[in-house]
Amino acid sequence: MNAEDLKRFFDRDKFAEYNGIKLLEAADGHARSSMPVTPQHLNGLGIVHGGALFALADFTFAAASNSRGNVAVAINANISYMKAVSSGLLFADAREISVNPKIGTYTIDVTNEAGDLLAVFQGMVYRKKEKVEDL
Image (tube, rainbow, N blue to C red):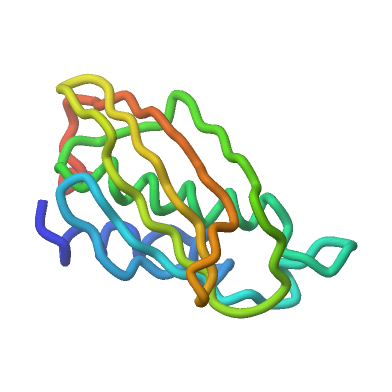
């Protein structure tokens, strides 16, 4: 699946749009996304809510895992938080750790503009027979 088709597919993600998440690049097994921190992303302590970091990582995970063309759905995901942040532009970079016709595993690093590691997300997908472009 080419990058433009994948971008068009993920442009339909209204939750990502609402949160300001943008797909910057995607190709076979990897993806990069960004999200500007806004007041809606902050928790009661004034730092980015863990759910917002998870959403950014999860969206990027979806882009990377679906980049090979077959529909991929998450079957497991977890995240570890390393550092708090309360402003700026955040990035998520997904890389494929292993891939086979049915299962894929991915690691996604969430960083800020300075390159500080904020969170590490790990996910596993099940690959369906359906093609992403057929949806």
